[in-house]
Image 1 (cartoon, each protein chain N blue to C red):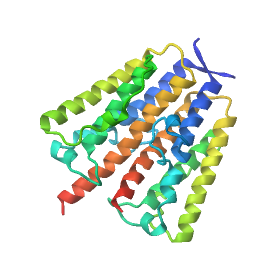
Image 2: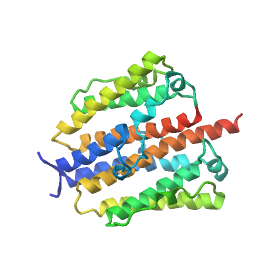
Image 3: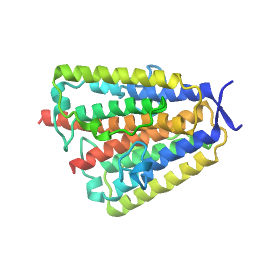
Image 4: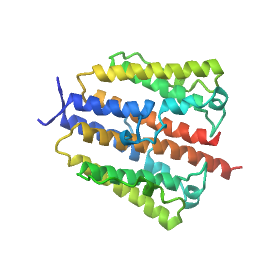
Length: 154
Length: 160
């Protein structure tokens, strides 16, 4: 049976996950985003009023909370916490005040750190968990692309 | 266990890749997209005029060509390319006529099929090519998210 080293998968996954949120410090290290295009930099320059502005029937605040809750949900799954969450709840935030926007961004940061730790400590990647991990990156990238396009309309 | 079954990994990569392009299969759960939201279904609904409409300094045609270009180049890297890529060339297309748009969509399908073949032929998965495979998924997902927003803006403009 042909195999892949667990550490190779964890390392590759962690690099892509980090780029998605933190971006990369130099152009040479970029894998798929432009410089300063990660989640944190993108949301860091948007204020609560902009995040609450309706664009294409949604808001940046809504996409941010949706992406965050997806992270939390799948992190729970990777940690064998199978509580059922009503995922429709992920779209409940539409507009935010400055304090709520700061709290939401801080919550994204906390959830990101939690998922990073989950990836690093997982030493038993298998069929389900690999799908979930790649789904986390793909889902966040999808909403990052949407958010950055919405931000251009502001 | 300190290893992953190669077949498990390949199966997972293909599940997410297929969902990104073809959408999630009927009757099965989806990993990260809503139903009918893959690249092909998204682009199929758009005319050449739609994808050539400039929204915030860009077009759907531009994002589509860029995403296709990335697929082709990363597959070349997986297959041993070492010379650097001039990524600015991926943004040369801005507008298309119907013939060019059909050609671009067909090109996207061919590039996707090329990625499927490229992944299937990998003998040894390591940190580098795993990263490239996940990057193909992430990069396409990113531009799919952008394209769907541009599409909404185009449709909104048409209706107002």
